[in-house]
Length: 337
Length: 108
Image (cartoon, rainbow over all chains, first blue to last red; front, side, top):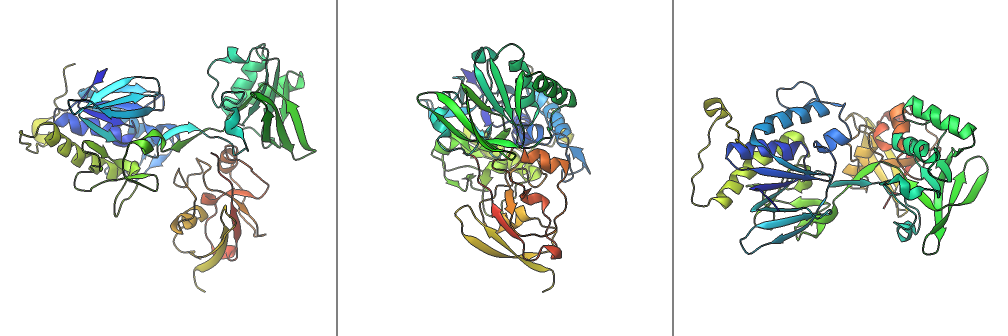
């Protein structure tokens, strides 16, 4: 069981800055994020895009902002549970929250700060009828273990690096048959991967279907075939054991929707006094919260984090007085270990 | 009609919304739909880095060519057709008066 003072759900810019502000009050933080790396959207969607509205930075790349926030948080030794999704929340008899991830990692803290941004990133699922009936019965959105596909027929959809890389990997001696389906002729992956797929297609080891998309799935208790619509010559049904649609990730509110929080339009309602939710001890900051006048800006999230930790401190130490100390006066005194 | 155009947006239930759109506010179709509370996510905020504002252009307006970024992101959208565009890349301009679009289906 991981014990901390403030358990932060979401390791985006707002969650990372919370570590710093909490650290100034001698509160320790641990972050959970569904993505394998910290930074949230900034790292996952647009690391190379410049941001122009961070005070005192006329321009900073999103990835660089994350790096600097990590550096700023470092003295306060945050813990991370990455690549896991916060799934369940419960309370123990000492008024502490226990948060369990989808992999069963347990965390315990008196305060929860939800800094989940747009939610957790999950594979984008194509709107194909009855698709959910075949999830884990032939339809997988992530390739976890390529051996799973040994001597199987596999259809992969997508035009990015993951679609190309897995096509190459599975076609080279793993799967018995690999079909790559893509909506246009051009691929956006690395040029050498594209060339490799073209070579494998020319050698007959990959069946390449461009200007095409999977529009239907069929089977019984397991996937048996997919229907592919092509621009050139109509629809084809091809027999397959697996279909792996690789269309990137998109954010979903996810399990926190079931945490008994007041939610409006996929956002958690908070009191702007301290960004507390309707559940005492649970706060929500950054893009995931909503209140009258809300703006989804990183700089607003920083402000919210700062006020939130003050309230969290008073909740943890109701008898202690808190005096605002300036970092220019006191410096930053990190934790030893 | 100065700096205002009218566009029509068909939502996923087939309902048609006639919207008055300003052309002097630097807005795009994704933002216009969001401001009219139509179900367009615009997750990335308009950088052509997600595909959540995918729509079909149903009128024959002369539109700017798709950038590589837009084409790449359409790879992650579903039910992409020849008239597919990302709403965030359609900047509201006087030439787009009478534009007709239809919101594309979203994933599950």
